[in-house]
Image (tube, rainbow, N blue to C red; front, side, top):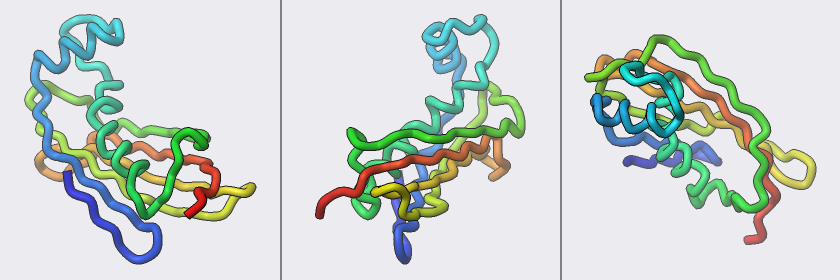
Length: 133
């Protein structure tokens, strides 16, 4: 996993490529109760979780998860995930602003295939209390 920080609070985290195998799909489908033989669209959540977690743990953002509320989430499915796909997730902080005694932090996560085409895009917003330094 690679993490980059730029000016201000901009944080970008790119995960390692993951190959979608029948075994990965079967385990995930069983865990979520999906029909066998289908790739659940929600598999993207499991594939993007490591980079989202890395963003939330990035020291530049000073997020105390015990004092954080996940306020919004949206997703756009560009195409179904297929067995054999090699997918890479990248999470990018899109903004940090003061809000109600804390900060509102927005970030986008994009899951891309080996050609660089977006497979799924997610947007998230967190409301977090200010952390004492």
